[in-house]
Amino acid sequence: MLTVLKAVRDRARAALPDEVWGWLQATADAADVDADTVAWEQLAIRSHVLRDVDGADPSVTLLGHPFASPVLAAPIGYQRFVHSDGEAATAQAIAGHGVPFIVSTRSATRFADVGAICPDWWLQVYVFRDRGLTAELVGRAVAAGATALVLTGDTPFLGSQTEAGRGLDTRSVHRTNLDNLEVIDGATDQDPTIDLDAIGWLHDISGLPVLVKGVLRGDDAADCVAAGAAGVVVSNHGRRQAARVVSTAAALPEVVARVADSVDVLVDGGIRDGTAVLAALALGARAVLIGRPVMWGLAAGGSDGVASVLSAVHDDFVRQLGLVGARNVEELSPDLISRCEPPPGR
Image (cartoon, rainbow, N blue to C red; front, top):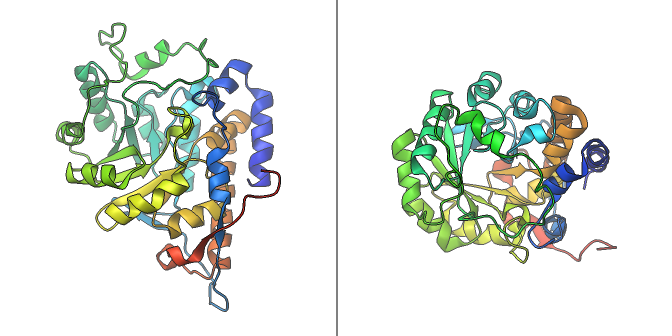
């Protein structure tokens, strides 16, 4: 992990109440929160030498649009629990970073306010038991300028997370973007009956490309693409859904092999430095998402804190891009990656 991220994490821990910190770091069955980081650390770089890498270009193309960096923030809800400015502060940092902001269904900030700050934004979607509420929420996001949807597919219901954070008032957050609607108990619970048809349904009601997040298998990725997905996000939900789940570093190559020729593949889970970003892109991902560290930055310093986290990982990636002998992301390939022994002390 980058030294700057460790310092930001420490400041965030000091700034946040125990229940908020517990909720942010929680995993299913108290799984090791750093397990996915360790998996990326076990991938080593086999660099080229004597390559002209002056002015290495880190830009990427996602859904047909160019962006300045492959380092994005993962969607996380309830951000006002972490900082009083919540998603507005995160949006400001991401707008300056030159990438899309993926806004959670459970945003504590109104979509219109987010869109006014960061015009290029995607909505992460949970399909509720009440499909009408889901459709209304998506419609409001489209009206506020959302340019893509990211359907979270690995949460038919919540996994067995630790009890930390149970005291947080989450009901008020649902009211943020579902105001003036009748919301009864259970209506905004995830719908355990959703299947691949949800991809086409979301596209039909929004007119937007739909990515599916939470994919860990090549066959599932292929099924999602066949059902109309414009991309997939390899993700294990930060181990919040299942404890003994495969690492995203291990799952990525199989997914890439099945669908990367036809759609964009993104990946999250434990990515904490530029070497992990480089490994992910060399293995075929188009971009990475960073979750908890962005919230550490938000807690530690609001918008400036988020910007410092994204910049630290991005700058480290640009450095590693040159060190590996590549001038741009298109020159990254799987032969640059090798497995190594776990770091000392792990």
